[in-house]
Length: 111
Image (cartoon, rainbow, N blue to C red; front, side, top):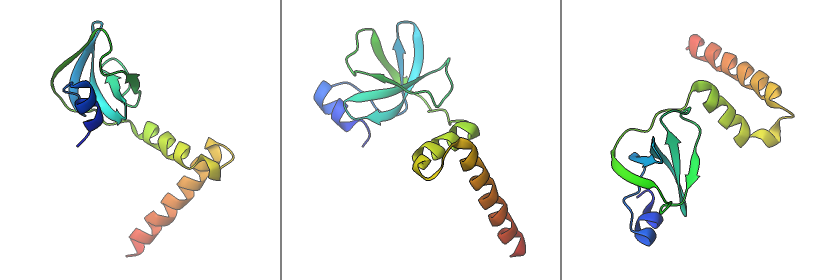
């Protein structure tokens, strides 16, 4: 169950996919961040996650919605960050990824 700690400890209806309102801005809970909730606002890119305390003043929990998917470029950069110890920079990662994608595409065509 997502946001279980926040639900039990703070007694709030937080869960991934729950719409929120904060000081006139609408958003959605996109990540469980332990003691916090990760919110993506509707007027921001989907991959931008803001930490909020579950009892933040001005934070209202609304009905359920759907979390927006991150863009392909955001997903690629997220993969780079996860593996950044293996590369000197993002450009090197892109070259490595491009090479391995072409290699797998050729393998699939041969089948």
